Amino acid sequence: MKVHRIIFSPFEVNTYIIADKSKECVIIDPACNNKQEQEHLIKFINDNNLKPVKLLNTHCHLDHVFGNKFVCDTYNLKTEASKDEEFNLNNAANAAKLYGVQMETPYPIKTYIKEGEKIKFGFSELDILHVPGHTSGSLVFHSGKYKFAIAGDVLFNGSIGRTDLPGGNYDTLISQINAKLFKLEDETIIYSGHGPETTIGKEKETNPYLT
Image (tube, rainbow, N blue to C red; front, side, top):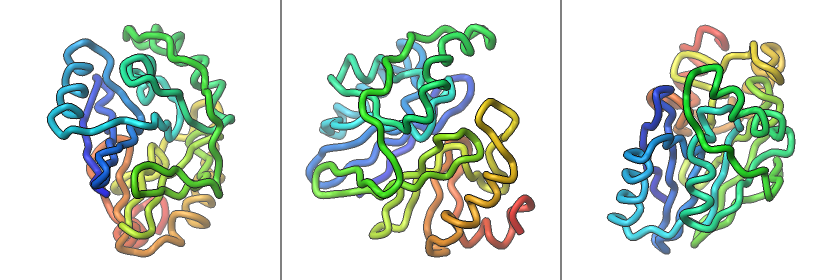
């Protein structure tokens, strides 16, 4: 599998496209929120001869679902996320207005996914971990074979996700990172929802919230 990152929107969200040799791919947290960014996404997919087969959300805060409707319409996909993210998804368009940002109202979650299930596409599969605390339904998509995890806003390089929004809880986030993410191999690359990637080993040693 290959992990591709494109940064979109004023919130500088990392949108991830994961593909394998079959050329099938999954799009995670599409954050393209204007025509130029939408065209950039299409061009990247076309230039790499990819076929999007799934739209996944790590969580459904407005900045991570800006491009949901566009991706669904363009590639005939359905939103897949935790059932616990319905509140955030349904509130996304109103939240965008508070920030003075335009967005198309995303479609409801069509397929509920949860820990213990697998995301399958092409020749590949991803495990699902439920790591609440940033939001109640935050999911992490993990590949043990290729040693990486798409972590959304759960864990960052040197930081953790904010916990002051609805569904957030600081103690829960810390305990869940320790219980689930820090059980992964130290060399596991963490691809976060914002900013640069890091590794489990580095965060164990240096993250001020977790050491």
